[in-house]
Length: 237
Image (cartoon, rainbow, N blue to C red; front, side, top):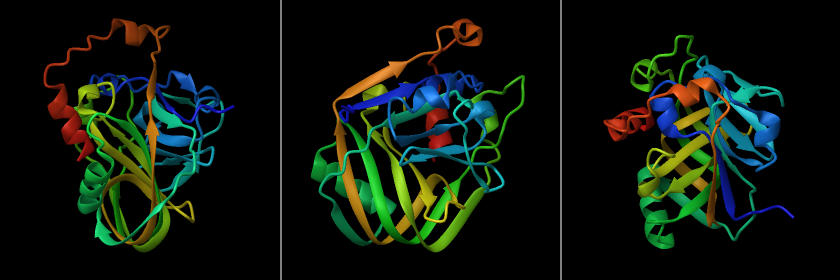
């Protein structure tokens, strides 16, 4: 039986802050722990949007690819999606929706999976560019991020709300990615406007944190948390 109460995460956001961008877990292993989620690819190459067991990779050109089972990732979060009673949302934007979800579901200190399917008046995304060794730190890697927009687009938002006390392990608050129904547009969401969409919020009681302890770069890294919050905030917004 699939565990629908756990979010499995490989790596930590703090690892990305210091530039640990090399893939350390095969997609085939990641997908044993979920069919839905978000992350990034080897070399920090774009944004991952995982829907219905398929790992879509949105790269800096805007092109959407599908990762193979033997491709490796440095950071990703997945869970098994469990359909729940959906709430229909009309004519709102991303900021207003997040406020509604926080208040209606009292998200403060909870992990939840977010799944939003529907029609969007506008979707604005960005994509982190592929990096080369020797890898820079996160702050340098995100100085140039291609941005994309589509109007009147249908698709799926996937992501998480995480308690702020886990900032560094992951992103405190909302972290959302998008893939359209045509699978040719997506990325990390900057902002959006909903026409009509179905919103599902899935409580996740457990965080299963997996670390690449056999990776020599991880073991040698100085994961100093000073200024970490500022770097994460600049990367996510």
